Amino acid sequence: MSAVPITVAVVHHSGYGHTARQAAAVAEGVGSVPGVRADQRDVSVLDDELWAALAAAEAIVFGSPTYMGSTSAVFQRFAEASAPVWAARGWQDKLAAGFTTSAGVNGNKDNALLSMTVFAAQHGMTWVPLGLAPGWIYSSGGSPEDLNRLGGFVGAMAQSPSDLGPEQAPGASDLRTARHLGERVARAALRQALGREAESALAVTA
Image (cartoon, rainbow, N blue to C red; front, side, top):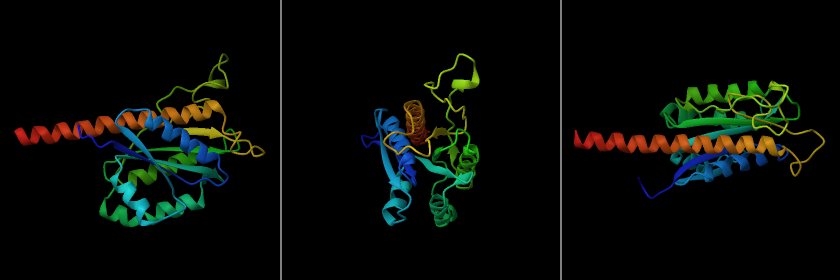
């Protein structure tokens, strides 16, 4: 395995700072896996450095607040600006995942996450779901401190009350859920990179 760490890019837009806290938790989870590093990027800045970082990443985790039942306009601008990458198949076979937050417990967060999966599919990426059973009110014995307390499957969901700033929300369980997603993607990226190296080695000896 190369001594150079595998990179997982965590790219997001945050309107008020809540999604940025979620992104930091995802990045923390990525960095907890030896041999993998997180590269956090704000997609409100569309420059050559951003596109170069995404080209170099083994996986890209997308993040956006859920506004009016979908991703933010800033995130959508980033998605549409990726058209030249799409045309060149630049992200083909990279791993992808997603996270979102809204003020409501529901807030149609699933719609925002599903739009990210379609975006990733159009780029030929492989989606990594959250991989957790639902917590909290899924069963009578659940707790609001459970991982995946909001019961998502496609990606990591968080809830940030509209009258609390990012220093207070999202809550600890939602941030731990985001951290889990980052770690899960990092482990998948490591397996993919190792598998690709093994495949190359077999091709050389064949």
